[in-house]
Length: 179
Image (cartoon, rainbow, N blue to C red):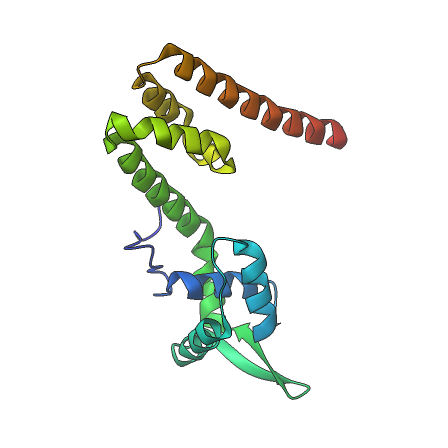
């Protein structure tokens, strides 16, 4: 595992989450600030709407920290990784795994500690959303077992089964496409 993250801060580059997202975008080459902003808006859709007042100060700070360079391209600023950032980002895979582990533990803590009178509503909402996939099956089953009504348990399990079968179908189609 890479150097542990603290509050989702990347200790490899000492980057904030926003800065890390910018660095990842720049891995495939220089980008205009507007392009970075547009990509973030696409990636986060309804969850977060980044603004120029957030992105450009972050870019300025990254230049000061020698994470990125600002290059002129036809009179317009383009941002690119520094050679030191490229070297440090070679650990990106381990860092992403650390984020996934931390996020999983965070969610598990909430789900495992939530009183049963709240878990029913939580499970209903999770089942109605596409976010259910981030919860491991064992945790999901353990939470369902906390419910009193067998009909609720059965309905939640049937919904989950349908979701998983749909995912398996997508995987099967991709395997078939590759054959």
